[in-house]
Image 1 (cartoon, rainbow, N blue to C red):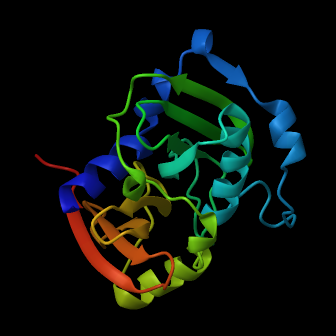
Image 2 (image 1 turned 180 degrees about the horizontal axis):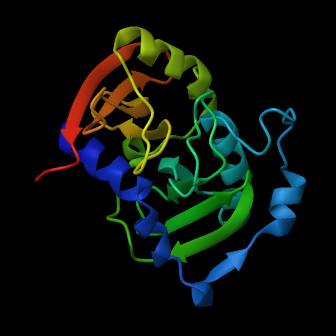
Length: 216
C-alpha cells in the first residue's frame, strides 16, 4: 500500500506529468468552470481546498459519463511561490474511472477553474467498485483541517524549490474500503518529503512516510 501511495502522489505532483495532456485530444471546459465556480474570499484568491477541487472536477466528469467515479488526485506544483499554507491550492489534477471498465478521465484545474479534460479509453485496468470513491460525502475532513493536524503530529516544513509549499492528494484504500487524504511537506533539511495520510471520513491519522528526494 505504501509503494502505491508514493507512486500515485509523486507522479501526479510532478510538473512534468501534466505535459502528457495533448491539445489534440483534450477539450476546454470553460462553460463547466463558470457553472461551478466556487465561492472564495479575496484572501484565498483562486485557491481550492481538496473538497472544493473534487466537487468542481466531479461535475465535469459526470457530464462526460454519468458512471464516472473518483479514482485519485493531487495538487499540481506549478506555482512560482510557496502555496498551500492554508490548505488550499490553485492547481489540481483529479482522475476518474468507471468500475469494470478501462476508461481514464482527467480533469485539470488551473487557477481554481476547470482548464482541460482528457479521456483515454484504454488507460486503466478494469477494477471493481472498491477501487473508486462513489460518494464525495465521505470526505468529511478537508485539507485546511488536515494540514493543522499534520503539523501537530510532526514538524512539517513547506517546500522551496520542488513541491513548493504544502501539497495535498487523495486516493482509495481498496482493502479497507476507505478514502485516503494526504498532506505533503518536507523535513527541516528540505531533503526528505514527508507524507501524512488520513482517513478522510473520520479524520484519523493513518501513516507517516518519508522519502529522500535529493541524493549526491
